[in-house]
Length: 91
Image (tube, helix red, strand yellow):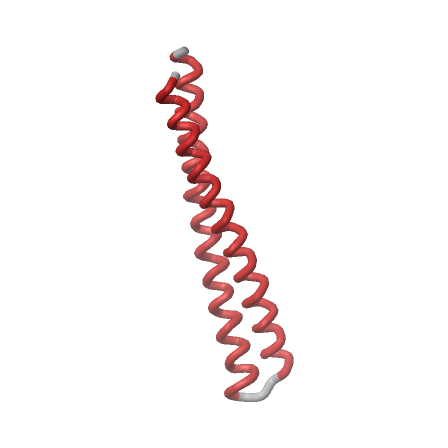
């Protein structure tokens, strides 16, 4: 039983570290979304430049979607870590 409990705790620790790395990628995606929004704003409002505006919108949408996808994965990953630790406590 102790071997299985140690394995579950090790697995939870590895998943927690992976979730922390995903947090870095999520911040990067959000930063890119902000840059894309800024490009879209400057391309459409301040100086009408269609290429800059469209590329800014595309970058913002793709990066925002990636950030949302990563957020969903992290949320479910945290639940999974909780379930693993709960299972390790019951063994």
